[in-house]
Image (cartoon, rainbow, N blue to C red):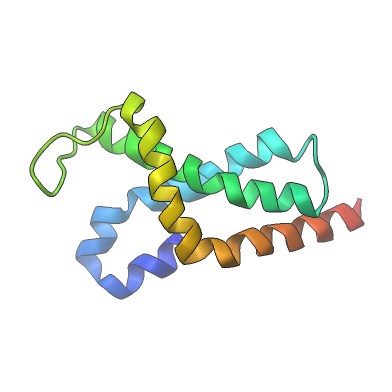
Length: 117
């Protein structure tokens, strides 16, 4: 999903936002490891998709901070403590823009995987 949102913006945006291509699957993997062992059903799948958003943003902010990247105002990016709050603010936007698709898709996938076990 992160790639679909970045590609129409061109090559410059891809290099600037490529950290999301690392954060998105990593966030989903971490959410899966934390939730799926305890909740193997549609609700578990939806919860994984829901919590993957803040995990993705936190990991992206952490990578940018660790790399010493600068913001658009040529200032340092948020530190790991500030990112704990910022990831929820960014997640509100990503839930609005893509969550309407990712959360139900996660629920559907969770339901399908639970039926296979």
